[in-house]
Length: 75
Image (cartoon, one colour):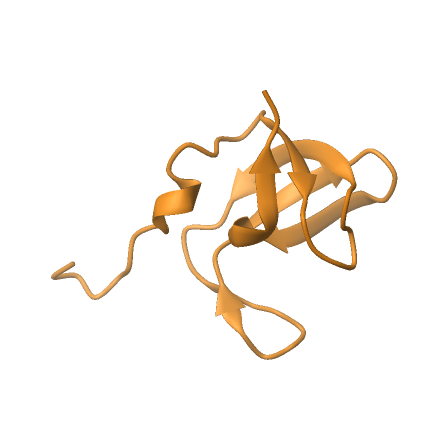
């Protein structure tokens, strides 16, 4: 876009706050939770990578943030 800000990646277009999701990768792989918010900017992850993330309330762990690409929407 002309503003220089990138939009959310395609896989996140259907992801919305309030949806139930399953985390696909470690350290929270297999855990299920609720999407609280979605980032509108890339966030720095512990490995040094920047990615769009979702804040989740996981049933087993509590509140965490996870890259959007690591989430599966549950129907």
